[in-house]
Image (cartoon, rainbow, N blue to C red; front, side, top):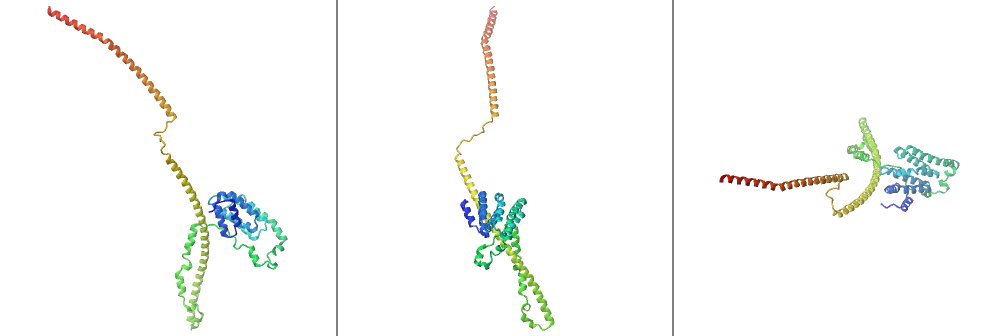
Length: 375
């Protein structure tokens, strides 16, 4: 889908016509570029104010399509259009508004009210602005009714070709919404048992005797009994064919309805497809960015990883206190060891005198014993 620019928007609005395809195509484009909703709505109201009656109606149908079909994606358009719609209705009412335009815009307001597109107070404001703008027109039409009535008179020289040019080649589409999936499935399922699919009834019709449908064969009726039998057969055939024809008419209406529902459903699915494509592009872009970040992270894998997390501030104070306590304990142990070593050294210094005394005593005893033996 083409990108959004102010020039592209103006070009598409200028090329817009009253056909359903043109309105829906531009509506999808505007919804796709809803992030530019402010610029789009501002440009739209500018086009409405300078357009003629027929083009104003086309632009109003465009706004209706965008507002209703963008509700599921977000409230941007609903809110943005809500700021300028009163101005738009006044602008439409200010021109020579045709009966078709009045009826169509009244229909739009009714649909918005029924579906809760805008609250009742806003709808009343839009309707009041539109009706107020129409009042001067009604007075002008009353005073110049004869001139207006003769405006499109063929007797005044307006040829059929010129009349054709004054009207749209295709009618302005009425607002429609996408059918629910289950509703569409039910309609298609019911068509499987339609009159055209009733082989039994078609076989009965095919087997009707030729006498009930050919007048020339009435000459063969010879008596009253035969006439009564033929009359009964004709009555039965009439009932059979009448009921079948009624079913065929109903089937035709159902198939037209199914065709319209399928058309709306396909249009909605195309829109959803475009949205899915847009989301896919966004997701692919996000994926590329994430992959780039992953590659950068892999390049940083050589950075050292801390084995343990850094201690908290409270843990640092605990460690400092524990270190201080350990230092005090070591100092005390060192002092005790020094004192014990000093005592042991003192004892070892005094022990030789005691030993010498013991040896001297022992020697004296031995000398005394020896003297006694000699005596």
